[in-house]
Image (cartoon, rainbow, N blue to C red; front, side):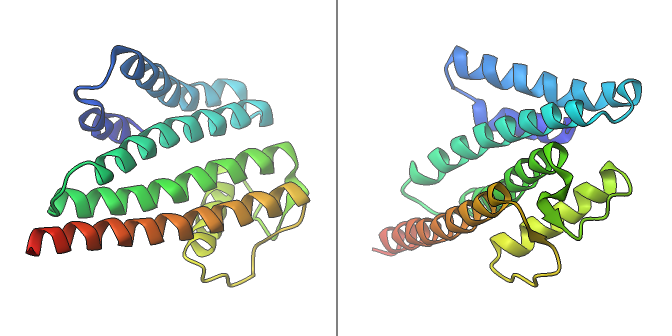
Length: 178
C-alpha cells in the first residue's frame, strides 16, 4: 500500500488543496488500518472498514486516471500505462467491495476459502479478475442478491470502461496520424 500511495503522488500533481487533503487522509488510513489488524485480531468490523477505505482510495485514483486519459490529445506510453492501471484499479475496487460484502455476510459468496483473510483476499482477486475480464469460470459465485448486484455492476462498468478506453485510444491515435 505504501508503493501505491507513493505511485499515486504523480496523479495528484497540480490538483486542488482539498483533493490532495482527501488523498493524504485516505493514504494515511490505507497505511494505518493494516498496522492495527494484529492488535484487533482480524475482527470482521475492522476488515470491513479497511475494505471501504481501500475502495475510496482506489476510486479516487481511478477518477484521476480517467481524467488524465481524456485530457491530452496524444498517445504515448503514459496513456497506455494509465489505461492498464485503470483496469487494475477496477479489479481492486471490485475486490474490496466484495470483501466488504463477504465480511458482513460470509455466506454471500460461494466456495471462498474461509481459512484466513489472506486466502479470502486471494480468492476475491481471482473472482474479480475472472468477472471483470468476462471469463467467468463459475467456480466461485455470488449467492446473495447484494453480491449478485455488485458483481453485475462491476461487469457492466468494466465493459463500459473497455469500450470508452478503446474509443479514447482510437481517437488519440487517429488524431495523431492526421
